[in-house]
Length: 423
Ligand SMILES: *[C@@H]1O[C@H](CO)[C@@H](O)[C@H](O)[C@H]1NC(C)=O
Ligand SMILES: *[C@@H]1O[C@H](CO)[C@@H](O)[C@H](O)[C@H]1NC(C)=O
Ligand SMILES: *[C@@H]1O[C@H](CO)[C@@H](O)[C@H](O)[C@H]1NC(C)=O
Ligand SMILES: *[C@@H]1O[C@H](CO)[C@@H](O)[C@H](O)[C@H]1NC(C)=O
Image (cartoon, rainbow, N blue to C red; front, side, top):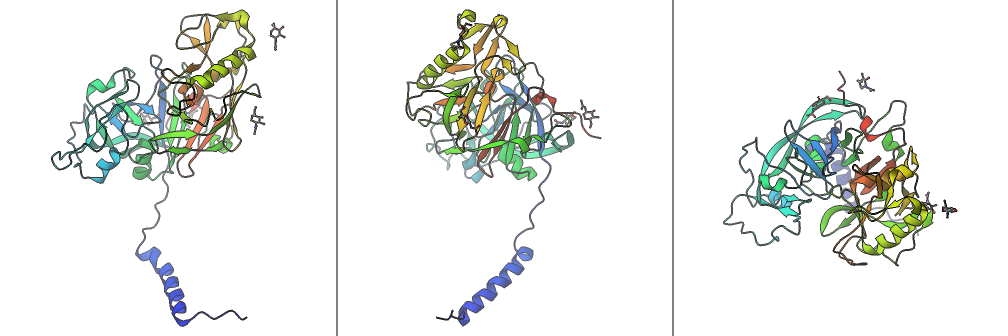
């Protein structure tokens, strides 16, 4: 049978479609905006709280919160009027996620209450307060991945919170910058104001090493001259979404200590998932994961001679002067998280053993989750904390929904970014 020629009507349709394709880019769609240079900010670790802050204005210093859906500050020097009505779509966006200690959604009366009411949240004190939503600007620098280039003013929408919401935050902090995957978190706002790529990069500093670096736009990143550009060295794993919150979840298939897989209860890691949190200083493990983990680590360490009484919140500690200190931290079993896709997130002593202040003591930097039962599906199996993300390059790619990661070589550190402006 011969192929039929297109009927008359089909031909007209094809011609019309061709015409549309030819005409539409010029007449209807705006030409795509060129991507602009990424935005760089220094990241400081506060020794008292182990939280990380970024300066986003001349006077604002915000705690970064990977799980936070909003940016908020005390707005002290702004005197900004509330700029949104409660019917504004931006107001709905700002209220899309509420922390458990905030008033539940749905009860708000939009007809009587004309100004947009939002609920900024302090993730360390688990406190919530009512506040206004305002237009503001964040001042930062663009970057070529090597140095700051020029100052930019990033248009943003932020919440204003009462001063009491700063409880438990670093003494020089004025608010929280949420970095979650939601519309009013800082990454999305830099994307819409600056037209950078929809990804961001964190290189969290270790204590006493100086400032680390965050890049909105995701990279490139150079820390040491003569070394390859760092985002070209990343391994990837999918970022998973949770319908209840905008945090970043990853799928951990197995945990291994020195390449020996940790025996865990069936589906322990899949139950509740694994989430990344900068507000948690050390990785928290649910009891069903913590118990076998700490036993295997102690066995792999094989240093019962150097064991000392555990210092809270840690459960396993050693006399640090008796341990062998290497360029990759204390000599200890490596801890490997095998991720969805088969790539390994491998940690050495740098990320597994922490010195406890003013004592000759180093402790396993993984902590048992409190108030949670073994296997409780309401709780993540693991909350990966800041200490385990330091000295890694982490790229949260929201376009491809994937996490890129690379451990830095021992001779490079996140504090080597050159913050001297190019002239
Ligand atoms: C931009 O970079 C310069 C040079 O490092 C620095 O002095 C300035 O504070 C930066 N601006 C902002 C807003 O971070
Ligand atoms: C990841 O680690 C596991 C356990 O140590 C090992 O069996 C596996 O071969 C590693 N995979 C890769 C891609 O290195
Ligand atoms: C543990 O340490 C002891 C004493 O240092 C040594 O004799 C033994 O072989 C070690 N065990 C393992 C499994 O490495
Ligand atoms: C930092 O960058 C500036 C400008 O390119 C350069 O002059 C300076 O040598 C760099 N500093 C270091 C430590 O590499």
